Image (cartoon, rainbow, N blue to C red; front, side):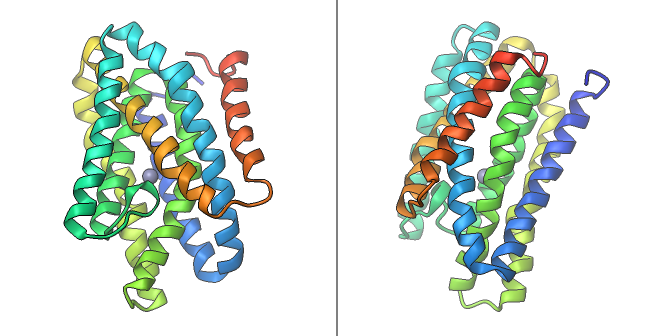
Length: 244
Ligand SMILES: [Zn+2]
């Protein structure tokens, strides 16, 4: 596992994110009912992973690198809260999952997802893989949602699918590759702050976007999907399956 360079890991996960996003788009395009249902489970599972990893693993690691990482986490959380408010005010639309209101918002969000891969993997391969699992799974829902939003804008199905692919799927690897050289220059202490900030962002995405959205379409086993995400994350952390 150590033969893989940090950049290879980032590339593998960022490209997987784009692929899973594209699968989400394809699924809602072809199998609408199934995709709508699966979306809820994927969101719950992703929420479980994305709440456990920051709290139990990423935040302690960030604080190990920089004592003030908890403040950065608070800043990340507040940044998400206020940037969503800002987009809501500007577009006068109620936000969907991930605080997405406009396609512009989706593009920015997916780009930031990419940056998150670069930061987490640069801090520690284990944190990158763990949060990457949650992030890649949430991409499915993102693809589904982007396509649905575009269809509401009276676009043809074909056009909406391609548009969604460019805005939601491709932007994630672009964000990762653009951010990597900059993240790579950071020293351990600054990287600790960056990771802290990401912790705040991930906690916000899990608790304030994924969970409420999944709740709206509560399914029979959503709760189990959420718990499965938590269990998988904790299992990997405790068994140290992935070297830190
Ligand atoms: Zn996302």
